[in-house]
Amino acid sequence: MSKPLLFVVLGSASLVLACGCGPSNLALKSDFWQTKERNIGVAVAKAPVAATYRQGGGLLDQAIAKAATGTLEAHLQSIDSSGFDDVARRFWENLKGRGFNVKLIEKPIDLEKFAKYTPTASGDFHERDCRMIAADEGIDALVLLSIDRWGTTRKYYGFIPLESPKPFCVGRGELINLRTNALEWGVEMNEEDAKVDVEGEWDKPPDFLDLTKALYKTVNRAKVYLENDFFGGTMVAPSAPGVSRADEGTRSTPTVADEGVWNRSAVSGSLVYGFFSPNDQIRFDWGDQGSFGGLGVEARLLFRTSLMNSRVRLGAEYSVQILASEPSGGTIEWSYAGIPVGSSAAENEFLGHGIQGVADIKLGNIRTATLYGSLGLGVLFFSGAKDRYEVVPVATPYFTYETFEPAEGPSTEPAGSARLYAAIPVSRSLTVDPAVRIFQSFGNEKIFLTQLSVGVSYCW
Image (cartoon, rainbow, N blue to C red; front, side, top):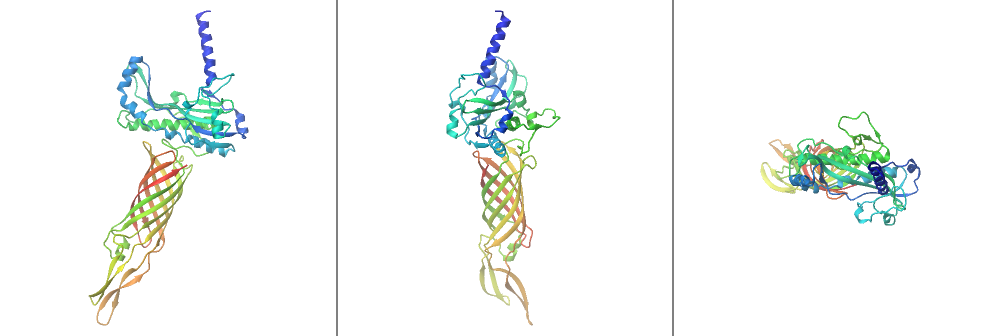
């Protein structure tokens, strides 16, 4: 057998073996959308650690290059991949909306725990034996979404770098028949389409902020690519220079925002402390020189929308706060003809209740945290207000003196607020939210507060 023929035979045999374990691209069959009786699970696979990848050079050259980029390697290994995980929920929502029996599997699947699969027939099969998942989760098929590899890639000539590191994230998606372990859909991004350039300076240890921001963008790109490939998202044209088609997907359901995690619905609770403005009208009415402000709590409910590329959440907020404290009441001095005759405490500690409609706007990401701006508009009303007085001059034939007469307590009035806060993830569903807010009422009271708060949100 001639050498060229031998190479062709060996190459063909290798291709057949590779296809038996699972192709890099296997289109979803059109009849999938007509067969809705199966129970389908959706999950993400446990992600590999982000790393630096090198193109070119021998083993010694790569060892030298690795030693030179050790700080970057350590930083990449510390980056959390949880920003990818919510793509499973997007698939779950889309499939559920199309009438499928679908289950969201919350915990990432560790494929390393499953044995390698040896096919006994021709066809396309998953490289791991995933069939036991069927009994564990009560499903017939599994949509498995994963990061195949991610980090940075860089070309070398020997140990000399030819370019700066380029962040990338290769997304992979599979639909596995759990009765046969056969693949019914399989796609993997082309690495060239998964790369982006760093905007700014990449070599800024120890945080590598510009490079990390670009890496989060590639994670977002991988999620969009998988969803568009499975659900057949249309592409806009023509594409802008340097923009991958995976960035251009448009769907009938809300899209992801740039970078970071999906903008999700949330319910939250916060502990608040507010400071009154020094010239607040309510201070003058009580004649109290103490420090106004007090503790409070608030609850917020926000829903994801498709506005501004899913950057806007709309919802409602309720807050209650002590509006006068330290001391709890001023002292009213009673006098006759300028002669003090007694005094009484003006107990002025009361509660302010705020109900507002709110709009949250996602401003961007600082590493894994998400920065939001929020505007609110609603009403402020009060409870527990006591003994409010006003000075009333009394004229007599001989002289005029002043007396204190009870006045009506504060009334309901319109109010607005503006908030700046960060959502810091502590798990897939929980965030800690430190915030600063200004609050202004527009009625007679003219209450102005600067508020500091910290809260916890549950996101879905």
